[in-house]
Structure formats: structure tokens, C-alpha cells
Length: 229
Image 1 (cartoon, rainbow, N blue to C red):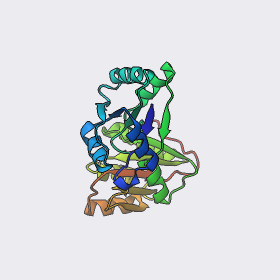
Image 2 (image 1 turned 135 degrees about the vertical axis):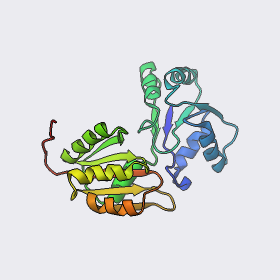
Image 3 (image 1 turned 90 degrees about the vertical axis):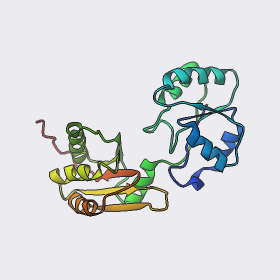
Image 4 (image 1 turned 180 degrees about the vertical axis):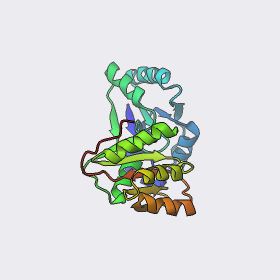
């Protein structure tokens, strides 16, 4: 079983090794068959069996894919963008492979987390990745408090529709904390906006962010107590 990292925006970021692995596969498992079909068409690859594996069917579908792998078929799994299992399906598939003794191989590729960290200029010697921020304000507030208290840089995914409220929540607690909003990574309109929470609140209030967003919060450098209330 091979997990293949796919482009997060720019299709030119697919690796030679990834292309060769897809060409050699008997079955291409993927989050969205329509999305992956477009990628395969771009790569000039045709005639592959595409099997949908997503959060709603992963547990059931993983077992059938593992059985096919045990019978000698070459199977690859693609997420829609980035590295499988990183805020994407694939964990159950990988776990099922290990339990059945099926070899798992990862073909490295793009990751919005690592791309955003590298381009942000914030400390990268250690970091925390929290996936998508909570939607409900109470839980999101606690996640922000924990990020502000953390020594390391914190990285989250956020919806452009919720970005202003999220930055406002950070600014309400620590207006001078440095943050970075990385958007549309690897795409034509890729941008990195870095400044204090209050500065970026003012900026995005005037010019709302669009596209896919990765939010980074500079760590405090030392452990800070979180208010228990």
C-alpha cells in the first residue's frame, strides 16, 4: 500500500516518484474520484480503477482494499490535496494495513503545514499542528488560549469566512502577539501576511481573506498559565 502526497494547488508539484507509482498501480483509492480523475488526466494516466475512500466509508472500504493488497494488487491512496492522513482520510486504512501485515510506503509530497511554516518566518525548530480550528466559539477560544500559552509555533487550518472572528479573538487576548496568515499556498495568488494580531485584524477587516488559509501563531517562548475559568 502506497500513500501518495498530491499537489495542494500547483499541479507541477507532483513528484516523478508519485507519477511512476500511480502508473504502476492496479487500483487508485482516493477521497474524491472526480478530483483525482482530473489529476490523472493532467498527468496523462488513463484506464485506472478509481475507488472512493473518504471519512464516511473508510472503515468499511479499508478492509476490502487491504484484502486486495494481500492478494497481490498494487494499491495507492491519494487525498484530494497534500499528504494523506494529515487532516485527511487514511488513518484507518494505514492502521488496517499494519494490523494485517501489509507493507505501507509513503511517497512524500506537498503539505500545507510545512509549506506555511517554511514561508512564515516564524520559529520552526518545534511546532504544534492543531488541524482545523473549532467552529464553536467556546472551544475555539480555548484552542486559541492554549496556542498563546504554548512555547512553540502553532499551526491551524481556518475557513476564510471565519478568519476575521478568529483573528479578533486572538487580538482580544494578546493584540501584540505575532501571527501569520498564509493563503492560497502554491497557487497564483499565494500570500503571506505577517504582523501582530491587531494589525492583521485591521487589514483583513478592510480586505477579507479568500481561498484556503493556514494560520500560524508565534509561541510565547515560555510556558504561560491558562486561566481556568
